[in-house]
Structures are given as structure tokens and as C-alpha cells.
Amino acid sequence: MLLFSLVFLFASIMDGDCQDTNTVLILGVRADAPPFSSFDDENGDGDPTQASGYTVDLCNRIAKRAVQAGLYSSFDYKKVEAADRFDALKNGEINMLCGASTVTLERMRVADFSLFTFLSGASVMYREKKDPENDEKANPLKVGVLGETTTEAEANHILQDLRKKNNNFGLPVHEKLKLQSFKNHYQGLEALKKDEIIAYVADREILLALRQKDMQDSHTTDIVVSEDYYTSEHYAIGLGIGNPDLRFIANSVLSELYDWDQAGNRNENIFTILSNNFPKKRFSKSLETLFRLQRITRGRKIGELVPEAAIYRPLALGTGTQWQG
Image (cartoon, rainbow, N blue to C red):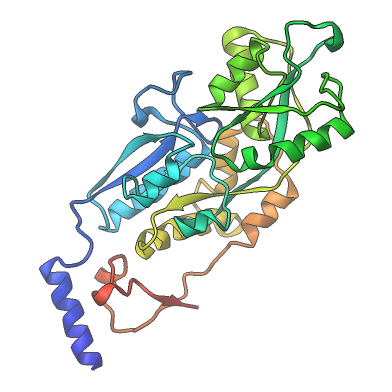
């Protein structure tokens, strides 16, 4: 039986029944999530190949490894929005999701995920007002949030907690706040600057990047980002379900980057990539611990007679490449 399986495997490889090496690996990139993923232009309508950011850098390394291994012939980019990114992954329009994606149990029903890539949390951005009670222009009942995100689901709890701890920008204490959803973070920032909303809720690193970009472009100086984290968001790279070989390559690349103590002559590890995308930022001990806990050894492949040429290709009968420690 084993001999038959091996013969079938070799025949499948020779006949091209495994992964089509002419297939292009499609990276889905969010344009509005700096410093994780963004385009050069503020509206996010630019060429997706010009995307940059921390998660984009990681995805590029994974994609190059996948092409080198023969899983794909090349890789390309496709712009995705926060509202439809997981639909695009589920429907096969993209193979990887490169942005700021929080892993949740519900999302695991429609997507696979890599090892965790970052630890963040929701915070609040607002405009500093000397006398918010006398500011008739601002609408104190509206708070902005990005639609179809984990932050949107938690926004009311965040704001209730914020009103108790820090109410220096005029949140009504007894009145119910109204959430206003936006398509992307740039729209939320503009609404805040026009006083159409009194605050904007999103992951803190994104808020800091938005504020920094606006200070450079528009010289706005009265935007404040709260120092507090109100949620815990574990980021990872989204992957299409049923592609264990791409997941293997993704996690191999990440695990190598997380093993910075054993980097040898390698010039890059996860913290050099972080430093390139988060200039002058000091990272928490929690993030370092998160990376250390995810250093996974390569192990040995199940079935010592499986040829090396097949380790990055699906096995016969759709069983996928299997490994054991």
C-alpha cells in the first residue's frame, strides 16, 4: 500500500497534478492601515505595487519564498477594503491578506492565519479643545469608527470606559453616543478635522501613523491620540483555507525572523523590519514575548521517502504536506 502511494505521488508530480506553478500568488493589500499597509497617495487609489508597511514587508518575503519554492510562478497585488477583505480571501480572489487583521474565532471559520505578527489594541483620537462645552461646531454625539472591524464591535464599551477615565475632550456623560462607520481611516480622519465627529476609534498604531501623516501634509497640530489601549488585538496574515503549503512557507519565514538570537549572518530579523516601519518606537516586552513563544522548529517531514522536490507541493489525494516535531 505504501509503495502504491509513493508511485502515485511521483506520477502526480510528473504529470503536474499538484500545485500549478504558473499560478500567480495574489496579495490583498489594505491601503488605509499605516504603518502596516498603505499606498503613497492619501486616498489609497494608487498602484497596489507601490504598497508599503510592516505587514506588506512580511508578505513580500513570504511571497518571494513561495515563488522560489515553486508553489507559484510570480506574485502580484490587489487592493482590498476593510469591509470585503475576508470575502475576497474566502472567494479565492486573493491568497494572502496583508494589512492589519485581528485574528478572531469567527474569522477562523472563513480564513486561515499565519503565526501572530503584532500585538496592538484600540485607542481613541480626538482634537484638543480648550473649551469643548462652548464649541458649537462640534457634534458631541458622533464618534467615528472603521466599518466591519473588531474595533467597531467594541467601540461602545471603549467609549464608556473612556468617559470614566478621561473626559477632557467633551464626551457627554449621560447621553448615548452615536457611532458613525467609515469606509477607510482617511475618511474618519477628515471627518474629525471638520468636527463632524468628536472622536475616532481605531488601533493605536494606526491612529499615531494617521496623526503623523496629517501633521506632515496639513500641519494640523491639535490632534491627540490617547495613551491607553482599550482592547487586545492579535494581528496575523490571513491565508486562504485549504492551502497548507503556503501556510508552511509563511510560518517558516516568520519563525526564522522571530529567532533573532540565532540569526547568524542574517542582517534582518523581526525587529529590524519593525524599526524600518516604526521609526523611534520602543516595543513592549509583551511583543518580544509573543515572538519568542512562536519560534517553531522545522521538525521532520512525515514519511521519510517523500522526495525533497515535493515538500512545498500538495501531496496526492489532497492530504497536503505533513510535518511532525
